[in-house]
Image (cartoon, rainbow over all chains, first blue to last red; front, top):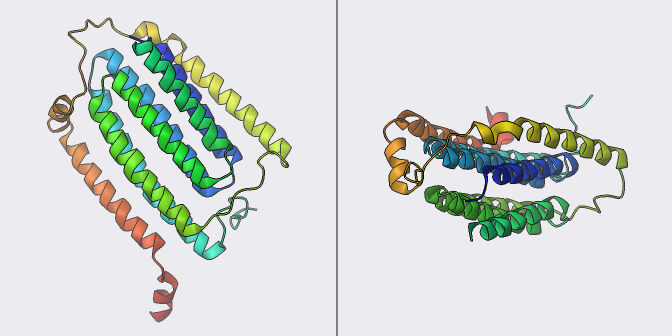
Length: 100
Length: 173
């Protein structure tokens, strides 16, 4: 069996790539996708901890995090559609109404 | 055997993740994300979480990604201009911040492997549908029901936000 360190390192790398995407991309849909990527990275570490503890409870937490991710994606995409209707753009640098 | 499968899936996951961030075309990004989620499902199989692997393929790679594709089709988004031509300071700051985050994660995960208990192969629980449902429908029944409320609230909220004629209704009143 692969050591748990490798799973945790993979999870850290995927989380970091997702954070980089959130910071440098300007398309709101891609930013949402990078957030999904980060959620998945955390799920990998949760499942690996559950598996290496021999305890199934961690997998149930992953199930709940998955349903929260689904809800988040639905609401986020609805917000993006609403912004696109008013603004005709999904470029997050142009959505600056609340910026001082 | 498991090591080879892990290396293959991990390389695939990292490569597709980089592809999502660096690709200019949004549709390509979504398709790469589907590939990424499928490789993560393979990793769940390696970790003996069959139920989660199936759920990952059906809900994430199936339902959520189709939703993303539909929204992109609806919005008709143009390709972004080249990623690295301007705002160089912004990218540099983002990169530095990400390096700090990566260091923090590695630091906090550093000594965690020694804290794990020794488990024999008989103790290891396989995440089949039966094993997961047995715990979920007894100890975690109320959180499970709360998930249903959460999803209903999300669907109603999304319908309300994305509805077409909200402004007109306000004017009528």
